[in-house]
Amino acid sequence: MLAFHPFSRTLAASTCMAVVLAGSARLPAQATASLAGRWSLNFQSSQFPREIGFGAGWMSGAASGQDSTSGGGRGRGSSSGGGVNAWMARPESAEDARRLEILTAEVRSPAVRLTIVETSAAVTITDDQDHSRTFHPDGKEEVLHLDDVPVTTTAKWEAGRLVVLYKAAEGRELRYTYSIAATANPPQLVMDVEFLERGGHDKVSRIYDRGRAAETLPAAGVAASPPGATAAPESPAVAKGPDAELKGLMNLGVVVEDLSPQASACGLKQDTIETAVSKSLSDAGLRVRRNSDEDTYVYVDIITTSLSTGLCVSRYDVFLYSHTTATLSYQHTPALVQVSLLHKGGIAGGGPAAHAEGVLRGVKEYVDQFASRIRDATK
Image (cartoon, rainbow, N blue to C red; front, side, top):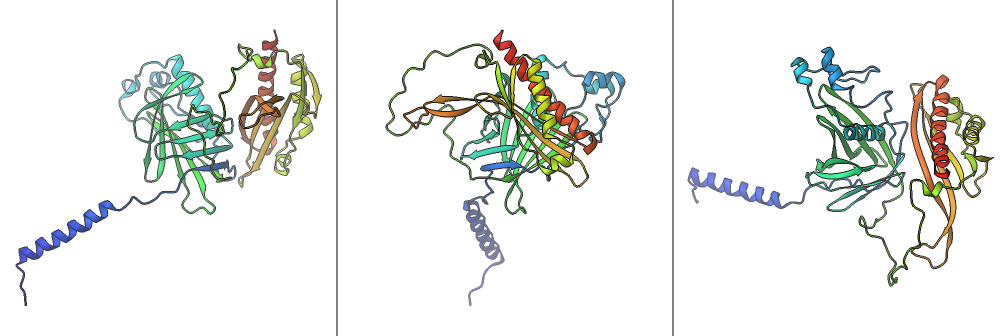
């Protein structure tokens, strides 16, 4: 029988443990669920607080010796110690204010549909207005532009979740966390958004259901061309200037999509909306054809759901559509295509008694904006 010295047994055990650890280090990381796909907002499962956003101006809060809280049960924490000096910060610039406005508006009116494409080095998220943002989850800062306003962002993977941090202003950040719900079947995309600032933060969670499978998108800035395609001829001269595509527009159709039973139960009426839209356009000097989608027209689409609490929530979108002929990159003859000239969308929530008025007010505000831009372009 062979005998081992206690030190030899210890050394052997240590050697075996080292081998096991070394082998474990070579094992691939546990696969995480892909975010890639087409996703549609689930109104029933998502949160729609009455108010959400960054707190009121710091300097006003500092002067009164109070924290930057607001009503509506937003759950903002109180500041700790330091008095006025703890709140002192440089005043927000016009660029900061615009950046805060854009980022907050995106949270308050989330996209109804998202398309996410993943590669080993980047994640591209495209909303229902065809706005795309590409993030490189390496933890390094990069600059994106929101309506020509720069914003510094960082992105990284944390435990299978994509975390994107927007620096909105000094001491104010917006954190998006994208993940796949492990218990959902079929899978659901969870988008958690947090407003981070001194004194606490607001948080909201949105749920998206999976739609069609993700499509492969061409790399940013690269136009896809069919195999063997020749160089495109030089583009003809085009009209330039703000809203050049609206110049000369005088006749408009109006189409309001049929409302669901939930919308009707929440007080919405298709005829009332159509009449209000037509009046806004007519008052702006435009000739209106109701219930017509010929040539150029205003299209209103409203999606409503009733929550278990009795709260009505509606997503409303207003489009200005037109038709034209175009030769597509994969065809040789012109085809009739629909073009979206303008688009605005928002979300309204409230009790059934006041909900319809809130939605109508939002739709009319967007139509008035469209009419003003058309009028200005034609001057």
